[in-house]
Length: 253
Image 1 (spheres, rainbow, N blue to C red):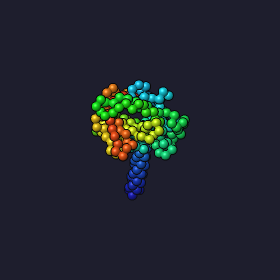
Image 2: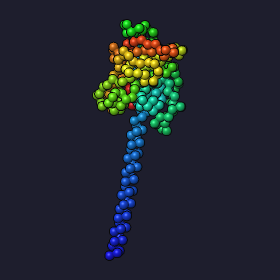
Image 3: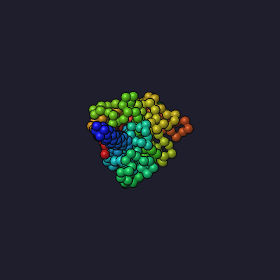
Image 4: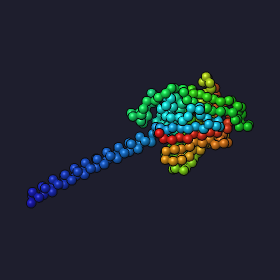
């Protein structure tokens, strides 16, 4: 009888150990899955096709690829945790780690080879502005960023359902003049996405973001979109209202 009790006792211990091992294995597996999911949700590399007409146009050199000619097009960039989208013509790959830094290929091509063009030629009547011509960059932070969360209920592009459209809370376009002695921002919506002090988006309207498939989105500044253009160079920035039309079609790499 004593022997039987001992066997049962040993069996119970073994079952507890097996259960503990099983629990630890499942927990480790779930943690890995969670880490992989988080990895996929940050620094999502994109390619971008920019409009050929309007106030935002491409440079005539085709698609903008993240990593080529030091361009970066991101969803959820870790460098800017409060941005849902960012396209930059000269990204500092060497200075900022990304979620895929360990496996991502090194950037290729030539710095400053690509640019975005901003045609500030359509001031809103009565908005205080005049035609300023075309800003070609590529220096001075020639970039476009959209705030995160996108709205009060949608955090990022990847949270949008296919076929859905929304207008983000804030969008900012930045560039400089030909010798970068003057720096400009166009604001659409609430406030500066880059937290530049003393500038705001009063009188502006917002672009439209649409999710067109599992891997593609469109960012559209439709006809009639109004942005507040700020010259950030003076100690007290100055601003006027301008019409701004154009689009970006973005796709996961």
